[in-house]
Length: 272
Ligand SMILES: NC(=O)c1ccc[n+]([C@@H]2O[C@H](COP(=O)([O-])OP(=O)(O)OC[C@H]3O[C@@H](n4cnc5c(N)ncnc54)[C@H](OP(=O)(O)O)[C@@H]3O)[C@@H](O)[C@H]2O)c1
Image (cartoon, rainbow, N blue to C red):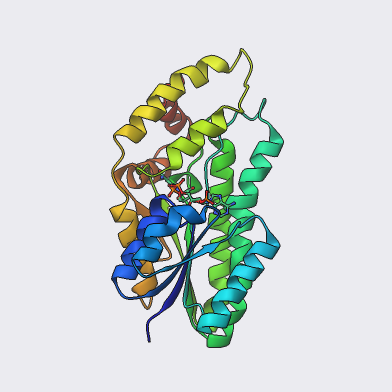
């Protein structure tokens, strides 16, 4: 029997490429996102597209009910929907950050809450939560996005301990920078950021650094491979950093003291 897999955030980036790869491998794949029109390729390749907003309880409930009615089960869930909103602690617009937490944190929890009862009943399943290198480290200007991904990590660790007894695996993927639609959304969110004169010069030097990093960023295949491996493995890695920047950054944070790490990061991000 082919696995039934739900991938959130399947209209772009990691989610889209993961869904396409899983379809190619013969799985029954449901891609979910708000932009149905961006999931045409997924449908053409034999997958199913569902319009879902992870911030809406009703939308998530209806989407999962539709899949269960048709398939009777969901074997794997990839909680991938998410985005980055950046800002300084002193001047940030709290509502903007709450909206991001609603997607990155509560969205993943909401979808999991609707899927877990079915996995528990089946006594099997896999949940893969997409975190980030900033689920492990935090840097100036990215503090809120990092907090949302630290929350994803903490909740994933607790979830793994809670649902392991029901035969359900929980894995965390921690990508570094990869070329997706991520940077466009960050730059769009930055239009709402008005940091004031004390912080504006930092933003002005950060933006070219950020653009340049994403222009050079690798394509998402390694992340797709890590997600597919977490779905297919009987005993997947609990967490996996993907990309040399993610592996290096997390290792550096573990080895260096806070102040040395701060200095290196501020220099690298052109924020000194
Ligand atoms: N690319 C990177 O460098 C990078 C690095 C580390 C971690 N990540 C994480 O990887 C995940 C995927 O991002 P990506 O890089 O593939 O970016 P992306 O290309 O912008 O894709 C983000 C996906 O999230 C979906 N999404 C956003 N808000 C949503 C909502 N309210 N309800 C449902 N879906 C929603 C979008 O779909 P719609 O807009 O159609 O709803 C889109 O399909 C995110 O969690 C991100 O934080 C990315």
